[in-house]
Length: 192
Image 1 (cartoon, rainbow, N blue to C red):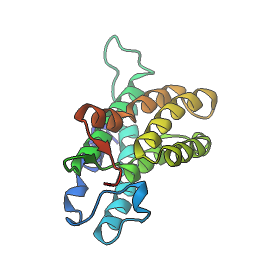
Image 2: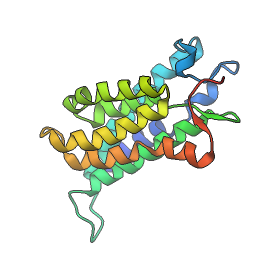
Image 3: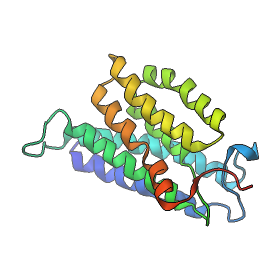
Image 4: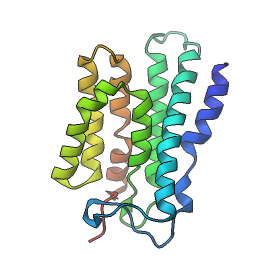
């Protein structure tokens, strides 16, 4: 299959802002609510997980088949394209649902991306770090930062995973956190 067909599948999946169809009266998800999304928002989360996985798969397949840019290292370019695409998609997902104070944390979408782009051993080692930091700080931003930094570090040690992908993807995953800091808002925490 041509790389452009994979990318044509990946782009609408990664950049479709599903959260514009959320239940309008719903609050942003956060640790202080102690509840799962209900109604339409529950199904949007499931769709986010699925489209993150399928979009990440198509992005990785398409990026691997793209010709190298002249002068750029050929073995790095597929990983650069995957990281740029994933970071841009996460930033878009975080900015789709906003109010005056908060961005919605794109956690289901992030989990879907990681399931297909990262080796299961890296994910298994990363899971306690992500959950522990999120519960310790009680914020999605700590979870996303620990996933990004932990992925970059753990990917260097796991032989089954290409370290270039986890290094670049670990940096790109922090896009929603950086976006919220620059916009002066909070990332997916419940309103007090």
